[in-house]
Image 1: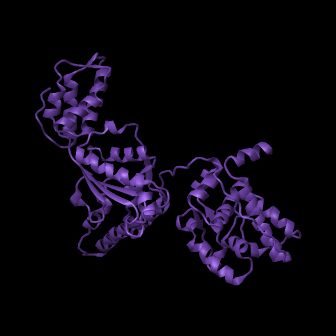
Image 2: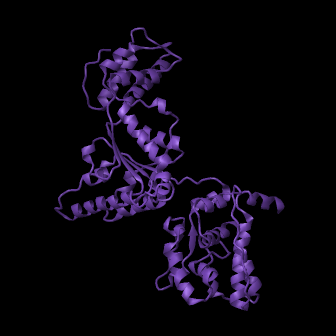
Image 3: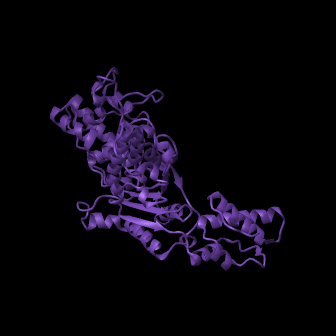
Length: 449
């Protein structure tokens, strides 16, 4: 038991659990026996536990700490509430004042809004009315979706609803590891990562400087908004449009921003978001934004034209609801506190209502000769020779293709070299690869092989 406690103590400060126990006991003593017991608030220091760090970092109030502990305890000590109540109500039976429900499999007490109300207010009606609104709507844990209020059956009081701690935070507090959400209908986005570095990204200087502005916002936003007092003057979040042809580095740039600022980048799967049914698109987006609102993630909407496109003149009901979707998006994007990146092949495809609200619009242009030359040199393998007739300068000058095209050509040529057991990459394979890239994009060119 001592070993288990030490293990728990490395993740959760046991003084916090003892504090919640004392608050519950003090309320029961007062309501059932009219005994007044003073409960001293714990000193939450930097003990290295994830729960304490979270409380300090978010400056949680005493009531918010109690709500957080109330919802976490069943995942750690399932009989916590039952054992305490049995001491004060030894004859058993119903105890409706305390609230709480049993789950389908969990046999302990799961806290409800009533449980929180009882611990914070007892049976004092004036305090209950004040704290009811606080618990249901006003505390930051509810506002930031860290704790949610479950559904109740028709006609039942809302105070009978369960208080539910987000699965990600349960996992974080009990294991010390962040639980990454998986692509699903409830979270239509997937994590993107990259093994590449900024040196591997070949962009024009102006584009790189614009990207640097995003890095500055990610690094210094807290100083700007809080220390400089700009939160009342500047809208939360940062909105940016990446526009340029496919293969010019838009997705890689988003991945590198996340990698070098320590933030997760989620690419939104628009096929799971957009629905032909009225109201479903807004519903799907609402789930995504609600999940992301306090996570400090980067949301990346690739091929954003399909959902952020221009509004049309209203000719029928379909146009009306399509325009409503765009208006809803506009509201959610403006209110979102994190970084949102929209990627589009053409800037003109995006509704002007969005473009006016972007903090930055970054053009990813097709690489010029110097950039193509760098891309060829960076991506060709160092361990295999090139046929003497291959001139990289000639390839860079003659073929106006993107970085993604160049990587595809090199991959094709390398695989052909391996399959044919050649000891060097032949000019023929390079030109075949280029011809394939032109054909894929519907371009015609005279490439002599």
